[in-house]
Amino acid sequence: MSTSSRLYYRRAFLNRPRHHLGAHVIAEVSADTYANGGDRLDASIHLADCYRCIDIDLSAGTRREASNALHKIALLRTILEEVETAMTAGLEELDLRPMGR
Image 1 (spheres, rainbow, N blue to C red):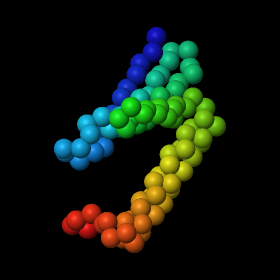
Image 2 (cartoon, rainbow, N blue to C red; image 1 turned 120 degrees about the vertical axis):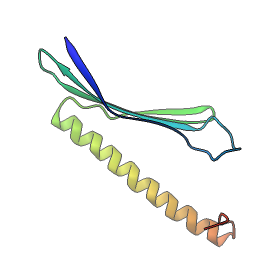
Image 3 (spheres, one colour; image 1 turned 90 degrees about the horizontal axis):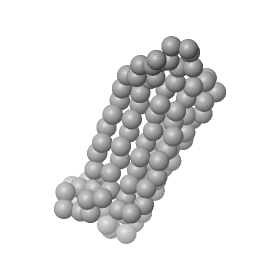
Image 4 (cartoon, rainbow, N blue to C red; image 1 turned 135 degrees about the vertical axis):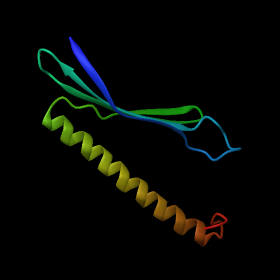
């Protein structure tokens, strides 16, 4: 017998209104407890942009897996911040910065 508790769930569209509607993200985290031990944290991020999709597994049942899952998240966060910085600089250089910024 097992019990599962949802710790986090979020679904969001990535594009602003009046843009393509297929881009979205779904993130889920749940804790699964088993009577015979072997408890596990199930976590994933699903990214979709029109026809392209990627699923990132962040699940962990051991300390080693937990460390690796947190490493994945930290690395993705760093890369996304670096991409934002590079895009902001490039848009500024090309005089394409979004209005209101």
